[in-house]
Image (tube, rainbow, N blue to C red; front, side, top):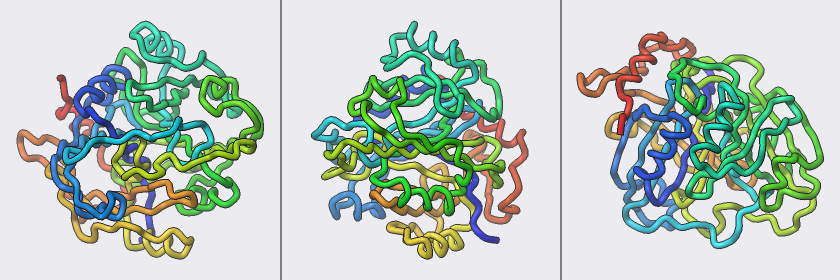
Length: 355
């Protein structure tokens, strides 16, 4: 079969306040479909949690407009630690989460009128796409971009959909690009520029010579959830002048404050494992057989990019469609390349959290 990258399933976000911040994400991004909510220990992640098993609560939320979701993650056995230094553009790791907008002008006005911390006015990227930056109440940065590929239209007042990619700080783009291009399928280089993006000047570290490479996958993704997850982009950022660049999660645990992982929905985990090993990115965590997340299940694994950024893979085996009636989809016996029927995906809207 080979591996199939179906799309970005979710951005993991470590927070001190799941319910409080999810309310903000529902208001501004419309991610109001609760796929699962699970409180448990995380015994498989001890490699990244100081060798100890810690308890946590995790909520996976999606938008029916399309795009990846958020896995909003909070420690319950310890505090959620912030970086003890000011994170700057060019530091290594998941710097910003890309969110797609159906109408950028209306999105911008909605964010301003509702008191969000908008960091810059609407500007243009080198791809011609318009965008602006916003900061959530926990200090996480989101890059709001003109959207491509929509699943539905919930008419959310912000005009936003879900996750459409990520901005990732790297030490050396030429060294890092192979993972994203060859293994993850982002083989189209939209631009490779050195300079200053006007929007970035509002960010710590946003001045000076910065190399930016925007990557896309040239073909639509295959797989059960590909239509819902939609097209995505990865922007690699290399600051060419800063000599004090650091890993965003330096001296902290996976699950602490900030963007903790970028998670891809995949099919063919064994084939992917072999490919990652051959490319020099061996699995550092692997759940093996089906891992039960309470209301959902699957196999998950992690790799690290060249700078230690956590990339998660999930091969979904079971997902709830209508939990009240015990209606779940079992994906193990389906053609892994085929999309699930749209009516079946749309039925997930019955899990909308009205709060």
